[in-house]
Length: 304
Image (cartoon, rainbow, N blue to C red):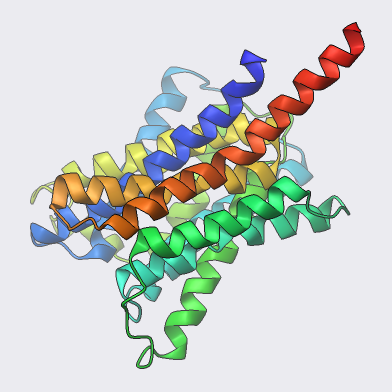
């Protein structure tokens, strides 16, 4: 049973690392860098970190099948696309509402998983999604946000970010033979870096901002918590537990994001937000608790 809890725990750790990113980007912006430059540094430094790990561990080039390579390329595309469209949504949406839109990936990921496996959502999954939805709205503090002047582009970019992140989780749930975890992360981060370089700010490499003006410090933190840690852990854990449960467990990103912003940026935290955080954690834990109880009951029946 302990082994069965390891993989959900890895998903929680990976998603928690994503929750740190928004605060790091805000700190970078406080020091004179743009969000596009910070995100670009994340993928550049992250790629350099993966290359370094690959040189010291694997060294041999991966040889995935055509199907496996396609899976990894798609995972990389959706990783980079999520960063791009989420950044675009922040141009039109308040940060709190952008987070709420992104977190629609929980139910979108569940629906995709159900469609792929030709099944209906289980009762614990449905209850969990409802709790997560309510908790997300409360935790993000959007009840007092004026929505009347928000352009349609904001809603579209926000929803697209949710879809692409849900797709990233689904592609990471597919095992790929002939590829180590490091090789998998290398391919995914390479594809994501190519996309980011096309649409964001690759000029930070040659204009001196990355290494001469100190952007690398934020890129190192963003690369560690936004590339290395989450993609490694997702690659290990999602194939073991499936995309549906991974989507639900990934909701821990929001409470972490709110908590870190309060600690580091001294942003206000209301009682309503605390209630929302508790609901998100409860909704996230529900499917795992139910699965553990069902497994325990089945073991007891087998021994009786």
